[in-house]
Length: 91
Image 1 (cartoon, rainbow, N blue to C red):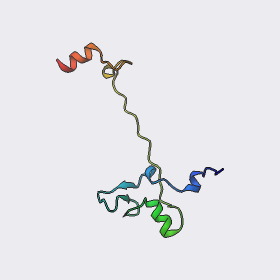
Image 2: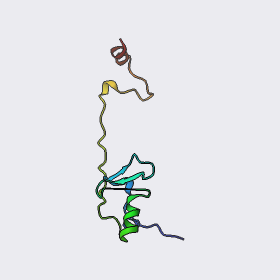
Image 3: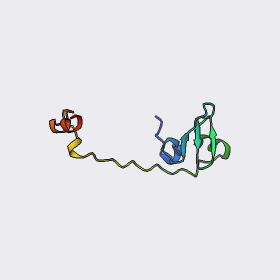
Image 4: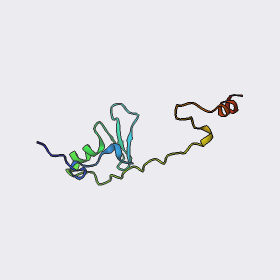
């Protein structure tokens, strides 16, 4: 049976890095803002291929902060809005 590798053994995941971007160029769809290049493969794979070591510039993205909606505008558990909300919104 194969053992699961830890994240440190697998290397960084570009999709979870704050410097990763998708470029507008179809022939070079991936980009690293930190190192300033575009490539056909994920930037971490290019760095590993060229330097022989895992990318040292990986910085995890910050988790998005959830935005609370006012209680007045929330639907009930069945997904319906209150009568007062609908009247105030559409009348």
